[in-house]
Every structure is written in C-alpha cells, then in structure tokens.
Amino acid sequence: MERKMWAIWRFAFFRLILLFYIVYRVSGNAEGDALNALKTNLADPNNVLQSWDPTLVNPCTWFHVTCNSENSVTRVDLGNANLLGQLVPQLGQLSNLQYLELYRNNISGRIPDELGNLTNLVSLDLYLNNLSGPIPVTLGKLQRLRILRLNNNTLSETIPMSLTTIGTLQVLDLSTNRLTGDIPVNGSFSLFTPISFNNNLLNKLPASAPPPLTPSTPTPSGKKRICWIVADNSNFLMETCPEIKKTSLFDLRPICSEADLKRLDVLFSRF
Image (tube, rainbow, N blue to C red):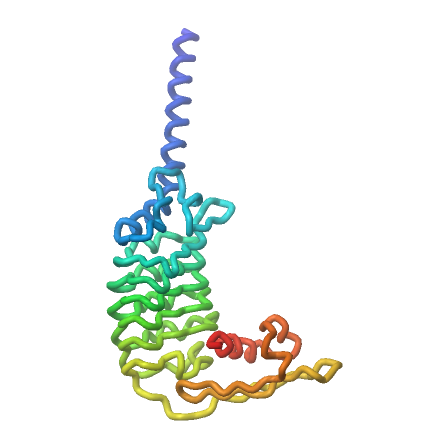
C-alpha cells in the first residue's frame, strides 16, 4: 500500500514540475514570439536578425535586444539596418519596452494601433521610413514618452489631439509627411516650434516669437548666463554664451528653470 501511494505521489510531483516548466516556457517566450512575428514580416538582406532564434526560452540573448533583470525586453535597437517590410501588432505585447528604435529603414505600411499598449515607452523613433496612413490616436496613451520622431515618412490625416496630453514629451518631430489640418498648440505641444511640423500640408500657425527664456540667478562667478533663442518657421537663431555651446543640459541645471531646460532640450536636439 505504501509503495502504491509513493508511486502516485511521485507521478503527481513530476506532472506538477512539467506543468511549471510549460507555464514558464510559454510566458517567458511570449515576447520572443512577438519579436519573431516582426522578424518574419521583414526582409533582412544584411542578416542583422540572424540571432533571433524563436526556440530559445526568451529573446534576451538576441542581438539588438536588451532585457531587464527579469528577462523582459526593454529595448529594440534596429536603426539603420536596411530592413524592409511592415510592423506587426504583436509589438504591443512588449509590456516593459522603453525604446523602440526602427529609424532609417525601408519599413512601410501603417503604424499599428497596438503600439499604444507600450505604456513604459520612453522613445519611439520611426523616422526615415516609408510609413503611411494616420498617426494612431492610441499613441496618446504613452504617458511616459519623451521622444517621438516620425519625420520623413508619408503619414497622412490630422495630428491626434491625444498626443498633446503626453506631459513628458520633450522631443517631437512630425516633419516631412503628408499631415493635414491644424497644428495643436495646447498641452505639451506648446513647447514645440514650427520646425517640428515643417513640410506637411498643415494649416500654418500665425507667426509669433516664442516666449524668451528667463535666466535664473547667475552663479557666483557671474560668467554663465542664457542669452536668447528665437524660432522662426524652419530656422533657429541661437545665441548663447561660449561656455554653454558645448555643454550638456545637465550642466545647465544650476542656471535654468525646468521649463527652460525642456525648451532647450528640444531646440538643441536640432544641432
């Protein structure tokens, strides 16, 4: 009797171990399946995706993929990789993704609405591709997004007002597309100058100079100070003190307000 009970217990134990293994493998490889869906939808003449093996437990050993300590994908870096094809809705399953870098390729088709599910996204760089169709309204759900660059595509229709609710947005480039309608000026879009929207079919904004930067109290040396910045349609005229021209925004924190830093971050990124 004891031998029979032992056999039953051992059988149940091994089944439990097998169940845990299957659950772990399925959950661990879900992100790999999403990225493999992208791979199968792209032509890869330079074999940059050669290491993307869908049979592995997770994609953390793949080139151009970065994971966190929990083996969840946080970065996909495939800029300037000569990839051709279309994006896939499965990308929206990468719940911890922070950087999606697919710029300077030959990617066509629409931007999937499912990218709006990437609520941890900090940077979305899809510029210099052949993307078409509207900018998804769902991108307004990316409330941690700091960088959005969709320039140099053939995107059409109006700019979604939902994008103006992204309070963290610091760098925006929608230029050189086929966007129509009005340029939003409320919310986070109040920071951006016309150069972010150039070369579209948009209604022009009334010409007006942006509010000047207000320098804070000078440092004891009295040598560092912000001079002024003017934006006029497609050109920036930037005059700063010599020691500021080659410094970082971090170095400017003692002498600039947060609002000024956000504005400088946008403008300096053009140079």
